[in-house]
Length: 212
Image 1 (cartoon, helix red, strand yellow):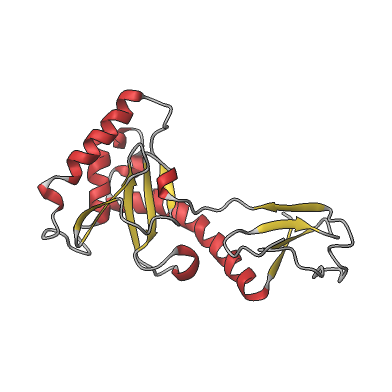
Image 2 (image 1 turned 90 degrees about the vertical axis):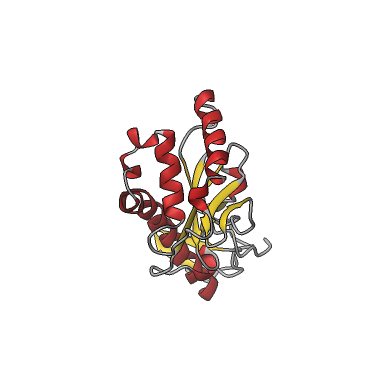
């Protein structure tokens, strides 16, 4: 199986109590020392779901990525995060020192939090797109008003979601601090667990985990 250092696979070879995580199946089982090509695996390799997605495939979502670099390569617990939104077609909108950016590159390894169902309320879906484009052209979001700490990408997202009225059904939207504590941290914590696993495999070639 060819190596793909973006996809984590899981299998069991000889021990039902331990999973072996890898990018490609090692020729020699790290648990029993036998050739994995000559002895059948207890559970054949399958791909573990990744918390990271391409924003263009996640409409009606809050999208999150590190301000600098990518989650897998650069993220730490102290990294600053950048946040934006996608429309019904997966077009990205975000706000930074350049003002509102539309469909800029760099969102191909992000965390996406779906806010409304694509197949749900058609009126709400249309309102989402219309309001997002109107908000992106508003004078509230010029590059001259941007401030890294007090008027930033989080303000852009929370203002849009409040205008859409989603704060009535999702209490995490009532403020920036609530958005971070109740929504963003929840998803980045899961991402952090995946990143730790990924980097251990990158360093050692595989990772053995006890089955819970």
